[in-house]
Length: 340
Ligand code: NAD
Ligand code: DAU
Image 1 (cartoon, helix red, strand yellow):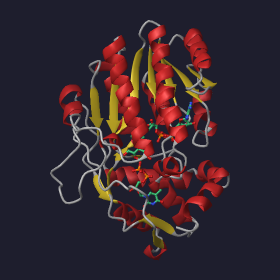
Image 2 (tube, helix red, strand yellow):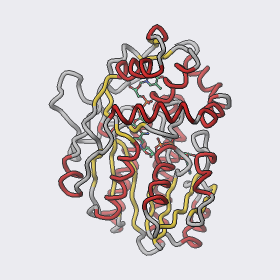
Image 3 (tube, protein in one colour):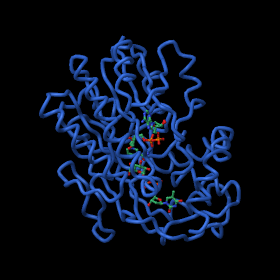
């Protein structure tokens, strides 16, 4: 049995990765560490908790002693670090927790890996570390050589963590890799993010708040394809390397929102243009040539299939997100959107 420690496994991509491992690798045990911030949800892990190959620790990655105790007990063969503060708008409101969790938490995990005989470490990063691209230069894409140029406290904290991972690899020989993925969508995404927010609001016939004119472009990837890419990097990636992950699927925000209206049979008159996000990145676009060439990875889910599956999932799993939007999220939504 191989033991993989997944941090942030009660969140969106981490939970999808937990199921990817449990369902696809019968020889893998999964140890999940998550402090259950507002973004973590135990109900997401209900099926995993019934599996004897799964164990959960409510544990903050910033807590050195707690992380050391989990390593001592579970002796992981590899660590995949998803745990992070992830929402750009929240990072504009309260940057400090982003620096603490995303940078210092990553350091704690890497120190634990070194203390346990150089445990394999994978850092789940983001294309946002590259800043943004102009809207009128479709020929430009982010490669692994693109300089780091973060725009928000969130992306700056992720870039800081990436620099620290590379420094730990060079200075201490940490057996580390980094992946930088574009925007994910799919089941279990917290409703503060564009796609689930628009689905939830449309179903409630509430306004659909599009920032600015809705012309910003994101490069969307179905979450299961991201999980497969991380798995491949863990198994075959070259130590000390960065791999970009994306599927050449650029879309304008407004087109996504219109598509959601169409799928749900809701009128576009629900769309409301609101004040733009501060420092709003214009366009992200990943060049995935390296992961394709070296590891043979290609996305398997088209956007048409993925978005239909995602909308169906939110329709079929109303209790999962209705419970979220009725809690702390209500205050957040009021704060973020009331006078916008
Ligand atoms: P998410 O916000 O849905 O989940 C984050 C999880 O981390 C939550 O379960 C939360 O409880 C946990 N967490 C937060 N702080 C913690 C701490 N101090 N200790 C332990 N656990 C903590 O995030 P997501 O969208 O699933 O993103 C996962 C990772 O993937 C992040 O590192 C993010 O930067 C990266 N990423 C996300 C996307 C995307 O489109 N969502 C794209 C590329 C990369
Ligand atoms: O690119 C990867 C990143 O994608 C991840 O690293 C982040 O963790 C993840 O949150 C995501 O960041 P974005 O800022 O791109 O995602 P978000 O869903 O917040 O917004 C997507 C786009 O939609 C962005 O241009 C802002 C816009 N938007 C978002 C919300 C929540 C709106 O127009 N209205 C909204 O209400």
